Image (cartoon, rainbow, N blue to C red):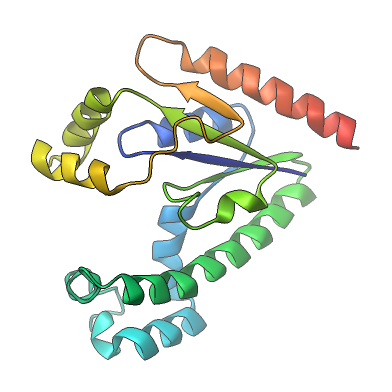
Length: 199
């Protein structure tokens, strides 16, 4: 099975690429949403987070206390690293179980969407990496519209993220002037050819 990592900065259009892959019958694992789910549903993960952050990291209804956590990790890189070292392995374990299920269904390629693929060093575990790229101004406009946030907040988030342009095996140009469908279908064709060669 070919494991494809999909990454890009805020507003680059990772989710659009993932949607196109799914339409083309390539299942994609959304690591961000699954990480959030696991932090509330996985009892072992909950226990570890409570050990590091304290019981207040969860609300009475069992959901994450996001303001509390954000305040705790603000400017505390060591604590953030400790949390990542708990969450990332749990997400990867969940992904591998999911990928095995997709293989049982006959899929030869699976995708893994993550904004922090390189920062978390998960890129080393994939056969191929697609980076979704767009001009900074375009990304800012998209993110402002999508998240309904002020431009300054989006710009600050972009400044804090690690650039991924050119780091992948394939760059998907999502500047609004190049056909995403053509780029994605061409990329899938190459991956399927490789999958056949690997058999």
